[in-house]
Amino acid sequence: MQKRNKVPSLPANIARSARPLLLLGMCWLVMCLAGCSSWTGHREPPPPWGSFRPNVEQVVAYLDTNARKIQSLRFDSVDITVKQGQQTFGASGMLAYLKPRSFRLIAHAGLQDQADLGSNDREFWFWFRHDKSNAIYRCAYDDLPNVRSLRIPVHPDWLAQALCVQEIGPANQYHVQERGDSMVLSTQIVSPQGQALVKSITVSTRGPLAGRITAMSLRSPQGTVIWSAEITEYHRDMGPYLVPRKITLRCPSEQLEIALKLDRAHVNILQPGNTGDMFVRPPKPGVQEIDLARAAPISSATYMPPEFRR
Image (cartoon, rainbow, N blue to C red; front, side, top):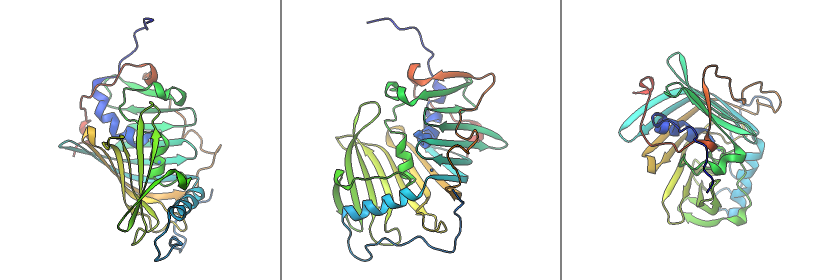
C-alpha cells in the first residue's frame, strides 16, 4: 500500500460541539429552504382526502405538491437548544436554504458569531469560534464519500426533507404501515459513505397535523436508530405553504438532542443568482483551512464554549 503523506488531524475539542450544528447544517450537514410570503389572511389548505383514510399515492402527491411550491426558506430568528448527555447549551441565529443545495446557518451568543455553517452546489463548510485549532473545515461534495470520520451517515438533502422542501416521491418505493392516525413510509437508501440504511417518514393523516410530516428517521437494517427528526409544530401564517416551526433532532449514539424553533419565516424571497455571498464560504483571515476528505478522523471528546452554556 502506498504510504500517504501525513495529513492534519481534526482537533478533539470540536468533535461534539461540531456535531450539533453539523447535524443542523448537513445539509449535509447540512442541513432538509420569489416574493415574500408571510401572513396573507389565508390558512394552509386541508389535505384533499378529508375524513377518509388516504392511500400512499395521495399522501406523497400532496406532500410533493407543497415541496414544489417552496424554492427557498429563510428564518431570521432561530432558537437552538442542544442537549448532550447531562449538559445543555443554547444559541440563536438565522437559517437560509435555496434549492437545490444552498444552505447557511449562522449562530451567535452574546455579541459575537459563534458558528458558521454553509453549503452550495460544490461544497459545505463549518467554523467555530472556540475551535482551538483556529480552522474552518470544508469538503467538496464530490469528496463526501471519503469523509468517514464524522460518523454522520446523512445525505445533505435529508435535513431539507425535514424542513419539507424536498419531494419524497415516487410513492411506489415505500413500504407502508398504518399506525393509528399516521402512515409510516419506509424505504432503503445508501449513505454517501456506502452504508445501507432505512429511511422512514411518518405522516399524520387525521387530526390537527393531517397532511404533515411529523417524524423522520434513519435506521440501520438491524433497526438501530442513527438519526431522527420530530416535527411538533407548523407555522399557521404561511398561506398555502406547509412550513415547520419546531423540530427536534436526535442522534442516540452521541446522546445528542437538538431543538430548533424557526421564526420570522420567509418563503421564496431568495432567488438564484441574487443572494450575494449568503451561500459562499466566508473568508477568514488568519484562520487555516482543513479539507475533511483529507484529514484524519475526528475524535469524540466533548467541548462546549462557555458562552453557550445554560
